[in-house]
Image 1 (cartoon, rainbow, N blue to C red):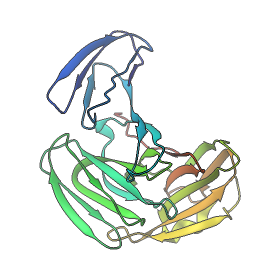
Image 2 (image 1 turned 120 degrees about the horizontal axis):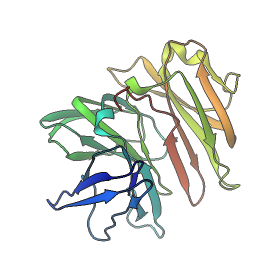
Image 3 (image 1 turned 90 degrees about the vertical axis):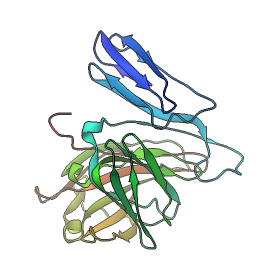
Image 4 (image 1 turned 60 degrees about the horizontal axis):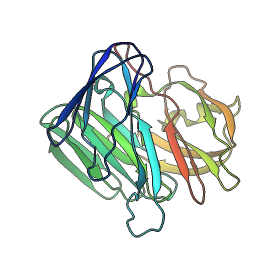
Length: 269
């Protein structure tokens, strides 16, 4: 789905099968492309003016194919100018997850590491690969910029993972009040030496539910997960030079959600 923010916006959509389509969109026009047969992963959207691109699926089984129900997942994509090279993907409590990694450059060597394995793969421009870690923190590095998307298993969701250089010092976010059986959480990726500087709504966060180590070369970081209430929250580090990553997520019996609380983009984005 492509949403135009300006009048007379020319867009070109190129699919992985070699086909393409061009359209002219006006202010707040929306162009939606659907396929019940082909995976649209790898599609390239180019535009003459800034647009928003949302990707997802109305029915999917993340990592599980023999389940009764399916999940709707979706996420707003980031432009290739915002791709990064170094990522720490936090665990989702004890739930299994997978990541898809997209390259914007050719001959790009991408390395994936968790506590039990490490693998490096070379992929081309606008190509992608998948990795399924063992429910632990995942480290992804690359020679050229990439985008990383995390997918939770059954009762799934998809979320962009910010690069380490895109971490921020403060975040304002909302944990939705979805249903009574939903539990809301935040995963914070921060330098281990700075974890005590975190403040949630002005106080040290207290409902710690998990701590995860990070593999080299980022083993000076730690991922801490807290249970939070529904509603509006502010999280900061009391040290203004400290930045950290923050993923907000919630899990219920029949549905889940997840999203980055913020991403620091460069001035050119």
